[in-house]
Image 1 (cartoon, helix red, strand yellow):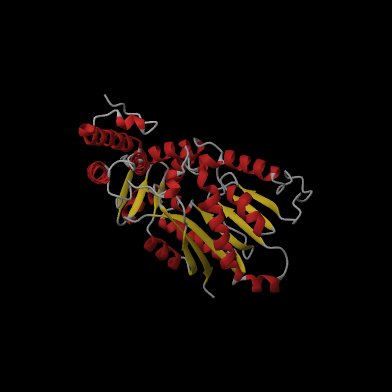
Image 2 (cartoon, helix red, strand yellow):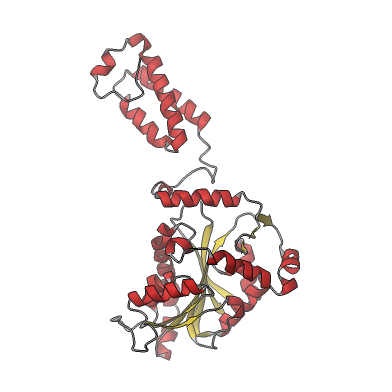
Length: 368
């Protein structure tokens, strides 16, 4: 009988009767494809079988390739199915990422997630009725159960943090270039605020390198405590001793605001940049517009509001597990217009796993 293990040398082939070689090879490939489908590495199995059969006669190789393609077509989902296929970045995901993908799939299938074309009626019945108290309370309850780590705040996809901040840095550099002249003419130290700051990931990896002073806004106390620890270790915060920063460039973290966006009102004309990432989904449309309006008033001359959010492709996705919504691009444009902000630039985040939502970065400025 023929073992499922590949031959270790060419003499193994000669001991098999050539009349049954084609049948044996075909069965071997069928088993290989079935196994490959089970583990999700069909293309790797295809390459392995092709390598091991390259010394066979040309007619057998042709038949082998045909059989391989036939069974692959029968057993493997179409590569045009976005939920089934993977990018090269997906193939490099570690086991933690794969577990996160499985949790994400399970969550997408739960009854707690629903898709709407219009959620105005839902907002009025479930959020506006008690001024959002239960909605925000449920969101806080959800995040209280999340570990105060980068992996925790990113839903198990901590490996995308570097790619995320790298793309954000390039985007921020580009949009600030057009505003740099006004900033230089005004003089003084530049200032930014990180809204929905979590454990201080964006401040530590991006904002503190670009701006002289950074504030953080975050409602969860255990996240804020971890942010203080991380930023103190990075030399950006002196632990509240008011002794200055240990960074050579003099950049520092000034204030930590423990409250939700719906309650926060920034000081007028205080910031050069208001950075809002992956948190506006917790605000209903009305609260979102009101918050963006307050952010616009908090900008200095030439300042920008930067919004980075997940984008849905099929209506508005309501997730009652963490009290959030994922909006389509058209919905964001409508909210920006209602808030009196002008779109300066928009870009897509690249190199994220395809299991995640599309992500867009918006640079906005107030109407003159």
